[in-house]
Image (cartoon, rainbow, N blue to C red):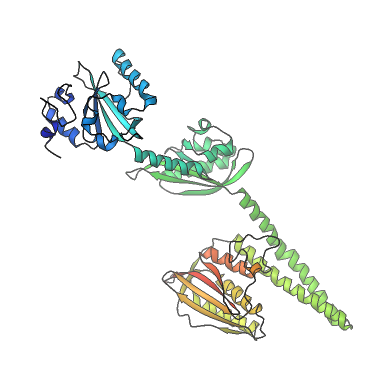
Length: 496
């Protein structure tokens, strides 16, 4: 940047500062002219000065960054050059009304308007306009132009997220009064924005239905105002029914790190809770009614098999007893599956891999003495798990043994690890897992009445691993056999 006085130009002719000698110098009205010249020369915000006839008499260099015009391209032209055509009449009328009435109550500080860039597109700007106090003939007005394109873009992005989420979302001040609500909330309630904004959260449409709901809303505001995240399930009033929502309030800080707003959110989990209740009913059915009835069937079948003399009837009775025993095993796995579903998100902790895997292998060798299970030395690896880890290993290894065509099935185990994951692979020499048994476990295909697996063991293993943050993968080899890989989060140290 050159010396401000040189930038100001020679007033006797065409100057280099965006003014010309035939027009008034807006800076000459100040005794401290040199100071103000330096100020406008170095500011990053565009400055335009106009006379009361709307002629631009001054422009600083920064105006080019905002509107694309060099100062000399604007000086001497009408201010309408940088005003969209649809707004020009209102601009002219507004200034003329001000000059005619001398209305000092018009607030021209930080007005947001579009301006026209040199290349023709519109630029959102914030304009602060004031009249020069000592200008008389002509009266002069200087405007400070600030490009707010980035801010507007951030606002549009925020609005796109805020109004397009499936969650009920709002914005509160620190006292818990609603400042804004999203479109999802308005659609669900059938209310207008003005029906909600300005209301304390606990007095709003949703929470005023019960004392408990009001209390939880107040507790959420108090907790978030102290800088803590709040979360609770609560039944609230919906548009045409009550609903159970996963309700939370979190603090939102400003650029200084001070809590400025609170963000309440709600996710409708009514359907989830209803399904969970149904699962509880199924769980009780499996634990008591069905299992007891199958034990009765199995007992009578065994009595028949020992008492009848006819070989054919004895065979039928033995088949009934065997089938009942299989169903009892299936109900036991289903019960474990229900237990894991209903008790998910239990506390996990570092578990030593080797003792759990060894115990499962020893148990299965006793259960299937005709099989061969090869287990490597897996060292002292630790994984994130809980007491259900043995069930995962048992279900996967047993699946490999039971579905082998050979009389003497072989299952080979392998353990590999990196910094974050421990993989336990189970490779068998059987025919592989049929496509129907893979549905919903090893692929994303939907489970239907005609396309589903017949067993529950792999479902149970996958469910437990998902709770750990792990996974279950299947690899069909080109020859007979397949490989199932159990991936577990790795831990480095045991808890005290």
